[in-house]
Length: 232
Image (spheres, one colour):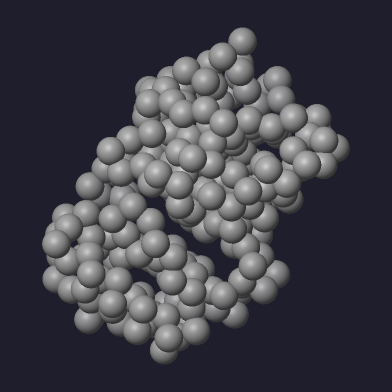
């Protein structure tokens, strides 16, 4: 499952996001019952891991890093991009439109313009120029723009890496960054795996995410009810 907008409400300050009440407990119940329970997030694992119970796998930065046996492991092609990302983050803090929050994630960075929604076009223009200059890839998200290393890693590849001889897979997500995971579900279904893709709706949910899912629930509270059903 995704984190922001799926397990946690979307908040003005990215660092303030926390799982809705009840999520941590049910994740622990799920981890005791199912082969794999995982949070696949655009956040760094250093942010997500302390918020979930033991037994829950964490894949961060769209598959660029993961917690394996308690140790944070970088994607093998990602490490040398850290200084490039750091330079881009410093440039963003210096030159991006006023009011934009720059979230440093180590192997990627996010420019949040939720506090200044009218600056969206300017932020995207700045990020496009930064991507061309740095070689980083530009990705759009809810009221934000992200810069990533040009590596074939996303939530689809992260999900695929977790699948090892299982009969069924369920994924919950709410944003365009989750579309590759929904696409991987479709590929798994063609391979004979039973799948369920669940979109978590909200005021900013992209229509293409809702269309990609088998079912739609209302916000993180709706996602929590799905997890409780699975735990039972």
